[in-house]
Image 1 (tube, rainbow, N blue to C red):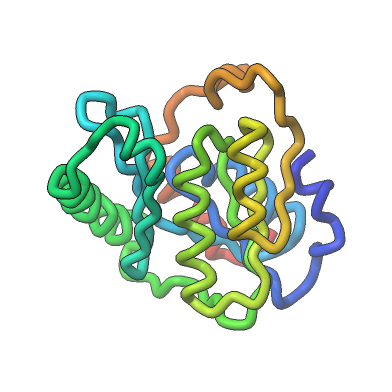
Image 2: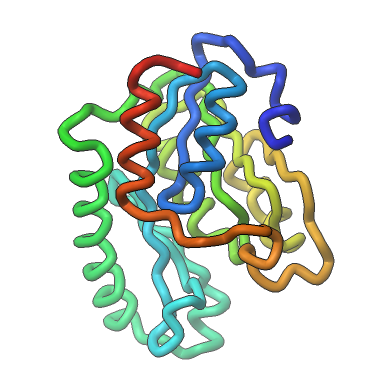
Length: 204
């Protein structure tokens, strides 16, 4: 259904689809397959609040990108040194995932491309925003954020970083991304590797 909303991008040689690991990769595969576009991962790591790792106070992405939720950080009174410590730990995981997922393969060239960044959903928007900023820094001509479901306020905030936002549902009572899936079992590193290996055989 998500791919159908972007049918105008099907079969174009200037389109690239990037999935945000891990959960965004299976969704991105469906989009890339439908649009007959090449698929890659875009490694972004959420920065969780001290003592509340699921609460995103920001995110980091490839190329040294860092996005912070300044309002939330002020509200929680989180010192800069704690943010730096959290970011340093996530940077190690970011580099590990680049090595594991790409397995020595060069990332797809994004310069002058239309890049569709896909996730399984958007809660705070921090991870997606970091991904969009990273893609722009890599020279993309047009950046599209695409996901099946998102919190209304967070979706609205993505307009600052995306040329286009494609979302199927923005329920007023959002809760969490997993509540909108019949099957939300965790996507594993092995799942991501398998999907990417299959996509390298050719678009679609």
